[in-house]
Length: 97
Image 1: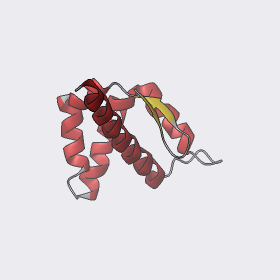
Image 2 (image 1 turned 60 degrees about the vertical axis):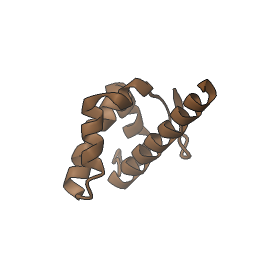
Image 3 (image 1 turned 135 degrees about the horizontal axis):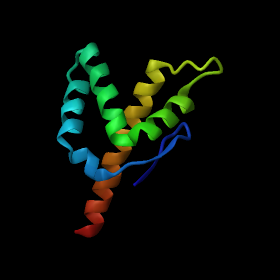
Image 4 (image 1 turned 120 degrees about the vertical axis):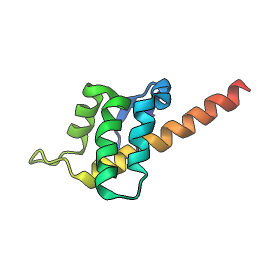
């Protein structure tokens, strides 16, 4: 599925990856409430979801003129991608029912 974030980032996500044990485990870390575990979760989940190339594309998208990829922007984009992916999956399941 193609995801478009509000900032203009576009990526392709295979919804099957959302059912991958490694992704679920990383998401549990992300949702743990512990900042260190959350960061660990995102750094594991992002390449699983987008692939190495997609992760690099996102880094370039959020980087400033000095090449710095702000952690808050990365986390925000990741969260939006996950939310949009969930919404698209629900739409797809509803239309198939």
